[in-house]
Length: 498
Image 1 (spheres, rainbow, N blue to C red):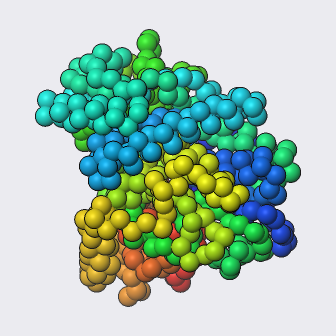
Image 2: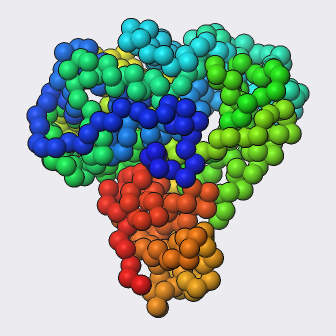
Image 3: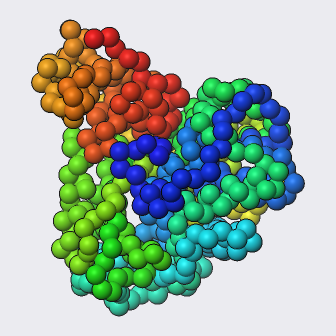
């Protein structure tokens, strides 16, 4: 998600200061492996590939680790809310156990790389908790303890937490971790370059021509292509139609007195996620919703702040940010071979648990590129169909897309006049008889754009908190000038004349 020019930079972005600048691709190159996407998944994959002797080039449309990884809550854990009961029900106990084993291995891999590459990233051990404050959810916690234990995690039931309010039930898993994700990724980039690889920022991948990545700066030809752009920039595989794009919100503040040292997430809605950092910050997140389906996202920050100040004695809140992720309809990330492209591999759909699943993907894809078997390849198989497990979610998601596609155009027929936009506001309005997406800046200047997402033609919505144009169908995002912030779109919104 996004770039360092986001309206609300994250704690991780603000506390890393100026990062080393990696120039854009300047000419056509040839390497063993092209990695598209410089977040945790892509950089870890590149690091592992380089360690195995491959020449690697990492490409990103923005600065490294300024997208989804730079806007996470950075919990390094295998405990993913109520994941194991769900996986056991949908796929069986063996598949759930494979998911657990892969994520536990990812925790060990992050620790190993931080130590071997000498990366100072505030990595520290922490216990993880999924909890409830509601009596009707206690049974869900008990079921998750059973499923997680069967999957191989050392999980236990407890009511004892560090939270300053009553918890009726919780599942606890020890020997997990937390860290500063951007510090870790910047360290990985240095290690990649030290191993003979290269990193290119401000280089947007536009299409995949065989095993050549075509960018706006040149072509990268390789023996293998690894796509880790959060959602693939190519539509092969139809992943955009099998996942739901969701936004969630976070804030960080210093706490007066004691603060929780574990990592917590609630079962009930709206979600409340709590963790602390080694440098003293309390990070609270939640308020998730589908992208483009909130008329005023500023209310999400207000709700989080009110909840935080009610339960914790904090200094004034200094950092606010939001993140975007994709949740697969069947509940499992897609990691493996990219359908329709020989020699290309993909990782997407981490379902808000990208710290471990991103590293899981790196380990799997490294093995696949090197021609080795991987014990978890079948668990996350990117070519799977899983009709039984995903049918309900896919149908619901695509019915919603159809409603937005038609409904937003009908709404455009009665869009307000552009003159009604106040300074600092944006929306779908009528300008000289034409429907446009327009933002009026503080000095009164209007910035009109085409309201049509360049991915598949849905109508964008204005995100009031982040001041961006977000597609409610598949999650593409654009800045106020129409430039792509996040795919699957690769083309900017067209400007409209005044």
